[in-house]
Image (cartoon, rainbow, N blue to C red):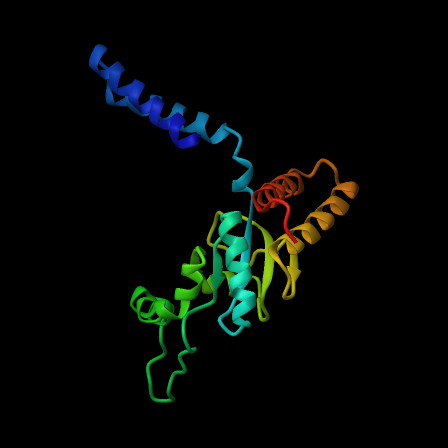
Length: 209
């Protein structure tokens, strides 16, 4: 919505320049006013919070396939820390960078490891930052977390469900935690956004275990 608003403003600016003679200062003022108006627009609910499913290839294949099918229908990706076996640096070897560990080339070489998940219709996402930021050491986990808009190192998750359960069960567990939190803080916009977001994913899953 914000990008659309700014695009319209710039289109109108171009039209104005064609009809009226505007100085560079006039143009700058118009752009600044448009940008200020955009910044005052309310953010979309989904920009405040997000849902992530953290998994690993070490999980039982049947559990991963079940989550893959649920994630496909909920339109959520399955997020992995990395691909293949963790790279161990030798004592005399230059340490590997994150790009070298999890770069496109490495992902491409290991895509066959994720083939059974893609065949189930799931979207696979490699995000070591998510695991590090939320100190994820065991999987599976379903997290509801605030969206980090800056280069933050840590961002506390709001809610989570852990254990080898269905996605619907995990989301319902989280939804109950959100409802309890809202009883104590009913005006909290972040909690309200989280409740609405989780409910949308539950609606997509429909009536299933």
